[in-house]
Image 1 (tube, rainbow, N blue to C red):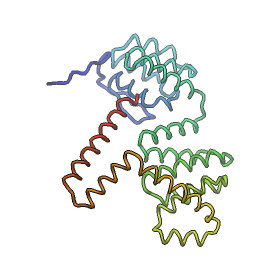
Image 2: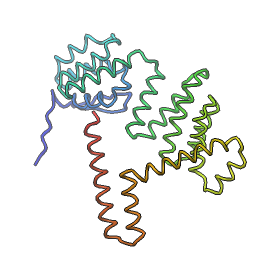
Image 3: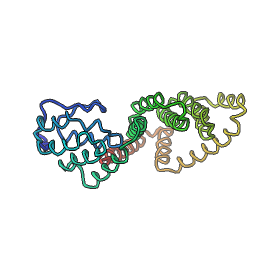
Image 4: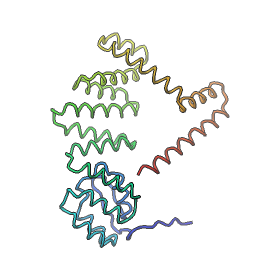
Length: 279
């Protein structure tokens, strides 16, 4: 059976390219999806006369284009511009449109570097880790030297992302750079955590002995690690992992495969639900 896709207006013969996202779109629905996806970092670039012309001539949405044309050149009305498109198409529920409108309004007037930080935060939260790291790097390059606190927070965010990629050496460098800027004990603890995760136990103990300043921090770190391990062991996922290990160690492969299939199936379903409700 052929899947029928309903659209508002017409499918364009020529796409419109959203430069900030490096994305070609072929319908107003794709435009709406992009607006929802990027609400956190939209700026006046989207109020493009070429976009309005495209909606008119390519999508046959003359009425919508005429309304949008009145907002052009009025950057303070960015939220109204975006909301008009979403409302006209009925693409999203009223509650979602209201949330997007507020998000865009709050972003109006932000400095370019603040926009990039919001963009990077969004990418990180969406699991697009490598893209987020590139954005954070761009933020660090753009930040004035006097912005010590913001630079340290950005480096800390990078360190966390590197940990998620198991790049503990790079994480340690980011955390230590953040510590050097502010001498915040928390950043040193993050640094030491990355070092502990990177090094074998014997090398880590040697590292502590060679860096006396790390000793007090290491006591706090071990306490946190113990609490984290207890929390994980008592969690649902920790119990499932323990059961899988028990099956594997006992060479009970049938039970292992059945349980693994169930756990993976639940994770897939959870991921699908999270994506379905993202907007």
